[in-house]
Image (cartoon, rainbow, N blue to C red; front, side):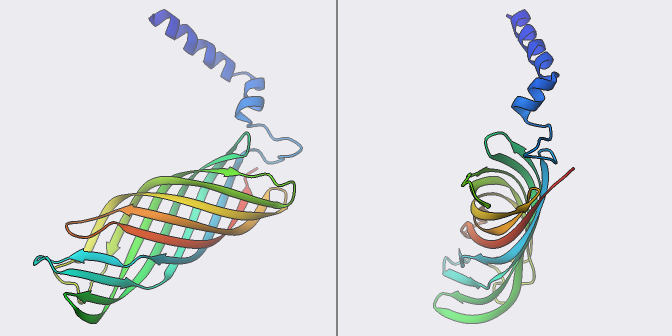
Length: 217
């Protein structure tokens, strides 16, 4: 059994080392339709929203914190596979202010902000339209480092500090081909953070961005 497995592995490695395998299956060689090869980079930025934060204090009273619109920036390194499939490693940053708090029927203002640093693996499928317009859809998962600055008005509920959590997201977008594999266009991303702490619920984020994709030679 071990000899059979070893023989199979050696055969696969030998096949992977051939030019035909690299060009036809891995699609790594430049061509007339792809003069720059499969690697590309992307940058994007835009408007970021978050659902209100729901929580309970130590006495069991329910509260809610209103989150203002903020901003998000992202950068990614990607690889184009055959049949319009792309994968990416992405790092992004989002910031939102917190402005109002309610607890046990009482309402008040507050001064604080929430910051998110994301790192994720994404996969997208481009849809060929026969035009310069290229819709796509996909998603990804990864981690997020959250930082809550001094939250005046939420003492004993959220608290100040940093934490790490798991995140997953879905995205749809539409890019316009500018030529030579450079494209630009808008996208929408829904993000779910598994960041509930104590009586605090998970967080949902919404990102509307404009991005630029460009090839590496």
